Amino acid sequence: MAIREGAWDCPVCGRKGNRGPDKFCGGCGSPRGPEVKFYLPEDAPEVTEAEALKRAQAGPDWVCPYCGADNPSTNEFCSGCGAPRDGAKNREVVEHRLDAPPPPPVAAPLASAPQTDSRLKKGCGFAFLGLIALAALVFFLGRPKSTTLTVTGHHWLRTIAVEELRPVTEQAWEGDVPGGARVLGKSREVHHVDHIQIGSETRTRTVSEQVQTGTERVKVGTKDLGNTGAGVDITNGAHGNSVGGSSASMCNVISGNDLFGVGIYNGSTGNTVQNNRIGICAKGYALLNSKSAVSVSSASRMNVAYDARSSGDECGTFS
Image (tube, rainbow, N blue to C red; front, side, top):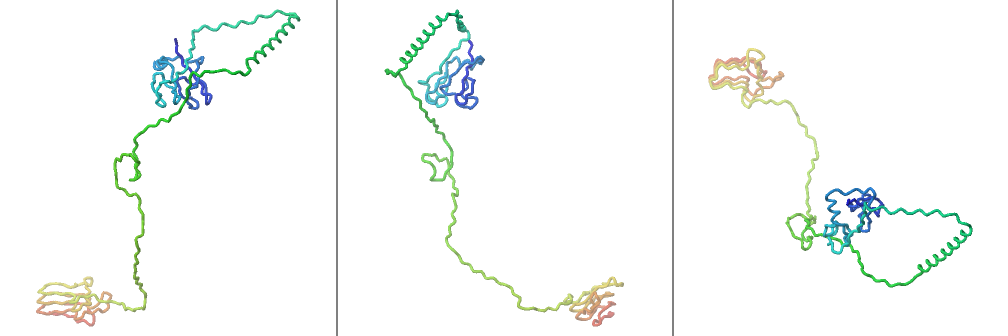
């Protein structure tokens, strides 16, 4: 005997031909419900998969009396709410045998022979009497009457909310932890900051302002930057030195010193001072030394000086 897959129609959206094993409508997603009727379409496919055959041969599904969910025959508890199967109602089983003989054809009524007018009138009279009798029968059966019924059983449906307790991990400030909670760890953190004035302080600042009260006139000019002693010292037996040279390009400016321009002392011999500007600045103006331009003393001899100088300086050849 072949096992074929049935179908059911959605009572919510009217979608037809949902597969029998589907618990939800393929059109609107509504659950199948316990009141849905199954039927076998003419083109119903044959069940060939081993798992589907095993489920079909195990028996009809049963309907949970608590949540109304369909469950396979092999389940002992509801897959929707977890209620036990005790007292659950099985789905109605309708068997369609493909090898059953076809129903006998309905015999066609025989054609009646032509009747005479008298027989026609007689037949109409019997029909009228039959209608009267039928109306009397309907009136007799349809009139109100009382009877006694015996209740042999009853049942009711209820809906329960299935809840589950699960551990959760949350954070809360001390004092806000729910009672009975298990504290996994603690840490010190800033809850909030309040800015509160605790006093005041008065500070005084003195500001000085510079104000011009007058004008000072300062004379500016040229100032010598000479040495505090002689401009050039040749001393301690120095011999064969030259200050300047034979050409003007070798000229030195020796001016503005606090003593001599050139001093030759302490037994220094054979020194030459030649072609220098002594007591004259680089621009040709007089910038005198405090004493003579060239001074030779302290047993120094055989020294020669040929230099340009200012009119206030004394210069010559000394030995």
